[in-house]
Image (spheres, rainbow, N blue to C red):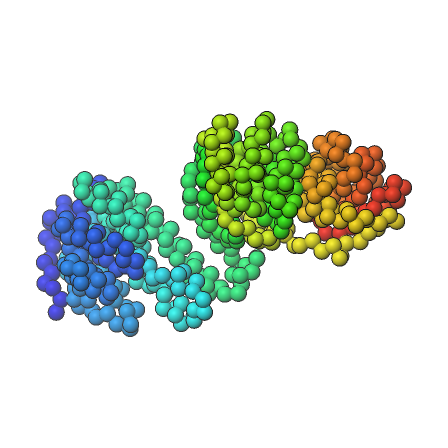
Length: 540
């Protein structure tokens, strides 16, 4: 027989159990997988004269530590069975959680069926996600980690948060403990805990659905797309001061990222800083050679590769010195002292630098230079592997666009020289560099490169010939002997005429225009070799 339950005097129940702002906890259910900090918190509950009910491994863990605990099976007079699959699913448990304490009919039912009220439910769920992330996990093992009683208990407690406090994580213990000491668990906190409970069960169910979805979930475009994001921190504002903003972590993530990086120095990152740093990171991670890029307003204004990162930094900064002022720098190898000194040269100012890491000498130099001290933001993201990427997501009104990243490797063997003049062997490196970079420039995109460095960029124009004019103007005298890349075909030969006048000596583009023959004819006229790649690199 279970313990003798004292029946309630329903005339007194209304006053005893009415909803109050500060909940006085008298009875708690505890059933947890993560036992971090549990003994200390349970001992605190006992010191507050809270009666603890538990079952299975949790009850043994508490009892072994000397914590007084009541057996749920003894209370319900129903044994745990089926290897623990059935233990807390009982009306005397759920009635004691779900009963509305200011409802006389509910309290009368509790009285008639000898139900005890539970004021606190402490449950965290079976480690399903951790289990299925193990290598070679078998399905039967995964299925046993699908929690049934746990979600039911905490959802019931969360639904009745006006009368019950629900705890789903050890991280919540300190806040609960502080409020109990100061007078009881507030309604505000109980509502917050309920919200966090439903967030936890939602994420838990999504993990199970993803696992059962199997191969389809691994597809780029599954039937149902589930993304989970957790706020990392609020930002001072968004793109403009009147816009609220925050940064979240989550979704599919492959390789290094700004959100998961470590800020080593500088002021708090802004919304625009994060966008530009992400662009810088995604560009330099594409290169095998040491590479540096300078980003301004989410477009590269300078970029280069070289045999040393300091040489690449020098060429990248010299590509468009005017635009580089106040820019964002990305490097794909550790920043050394020589590179730091180049970035700090007189007249230069950089908002932020992202790199795998920073040498101690470089870090000291960047953080002690008077002009930059306490200002420049330094972000270390760890090793970069070329070719890493992830799907692209973009919100539109009422929906979401999803596409695979534009990261297919360039295959020069598939490129075709369509002009009478052939490409000099010495130009292939510049052409390959320009074609890699053009995919990172907003359309309509034109990029000039020389000696494996960007010397001019025209981006985001409504007319392609306007982008050509801007790129040539930016390059100035450096356009002489440079190569030109275009993210899409030339609709008319006017762009090639401008290129010839500027001294451009080779062009690479996708091809596919109705005017291709006219464009090729102009190239032949000026003896400019032109490459068709057959691939377009629009970036809207």
